[in-house]
Image 1 (cartoon, rainbow, N blue to C red):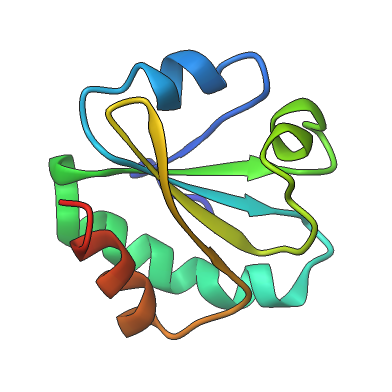
Image 2 (cartoon, one colour):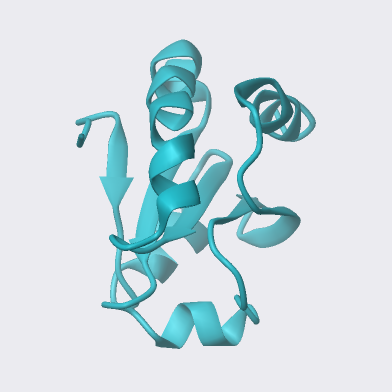
Length: 109
């Protein structure tokens, strides 16, 4: 399931898509084979629709992109990281209910 509301990013686009963004960005570090990653995908879709232009929700496949996950010490997936004003703000590791992810986003809006 892929939504036009969720942007797929790469090592090459990370700086422009995340660090230079004019709004907060949630990055979902995930992989195709990851069951918990697939479990939270519908919640991320719903949150992307709910927040609209207030936040950019993105996904980075850790199998296809090694540089950025290594830079931020990603060891387990899914890992959700919030960036605000070009800076890392907060992280949430593992599969969590939609309400927990929403409270993470709300804390940075």
